[in-house]
Image (tube, rainbow, N blue to C red; front, side, top):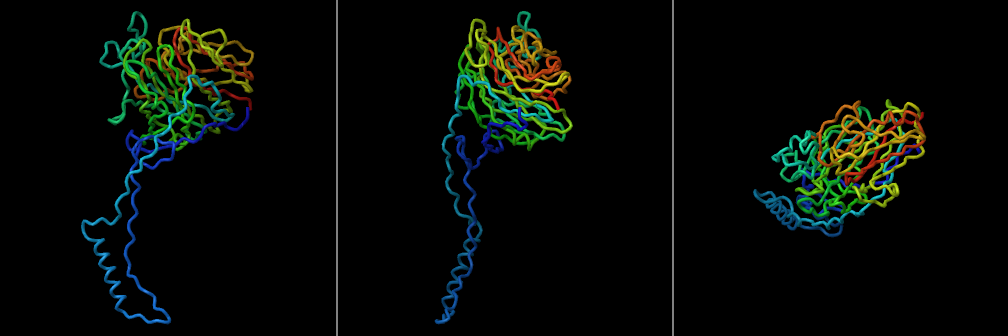
Length: 448
């Protein structure tokens, strides 16, 4: 592991906006096909009396000079008359070329997005973009995580699903907020936004907007964010699933801690057996001199975890074991009695449908199944957004206990890494849920 951070993506184009519709500005290709206001015209130069220089050879009478001065004075009077514009007519609006769609693939192999050994850590903010209609019987109980369907918690397939929309802007159809908590005095090293959902439920959403969302920083206005790498997009198991992501380091570094709002996540509403689901997660790696030296790792991709009877033949998936995903992190220097956390982003995990787990093996130690109060060891893909008990819970709006299909969880690693080691193996299993995995991130102590 080197000591230099790895950032393989750049080129994110920010666009400021006063409303969730991207603002009228000049853009650089690639750009979205939204209107752009004309460039403000420059004012005409003020007229001035034209005075001819006298030639050293030929003398000039004062008559021509007076006539020219009179003409210029008349022109100045016309320009300054009431109701007369003092600027030239505005040029016609410029229509930009249509923005090319982000490249897509039905499976994106997991790869290291960011890695560093730094005094610091990783924090994240997350929320769902869709939930059950609040007027539906049992919806409120389902959102609270209570048992409402035949002795089990409700799932997204039990409801007619509709968008979460917490802002007051009529131009957005979905929006939700969550808090990023970067420690005071920390420097943001890297930040990445992930979003995704199901495009096929009671309606079929077109994929053209998969690679675009709106983001507002704390106290700020919406900005259009474009996916800057391949979008994972695959139709399987009754769903039309996708995940996109973008580097937002500059935005988070400049804006710091607070509530971030993400809007216009492309997700379908309605009801189907597969269910509606979608959400977003903002992962932030930071440096702080007062924190322990840690390995900071962010890996992402996009792949399906097969349901019962299904099978995935993909890289990183254990051969012959449907629904299993294995990721190994090498060249680590984890000391004994180390501390750390691991986070995951996943889609369409149903609460109370057991058979899914996340286990971690450090070095030559035993495999440890991760679990906490929000995530049973045999049901970690259970529609939760959670943090370890030792971490102060970040704000979310809305703050549903059961997100009905979106997981963004952070687990305590202490028990799994107490023996130390030079590698970590993370194994995610889903034997009953038709789930999708999008990202994993780790912050664990490193030897000094």
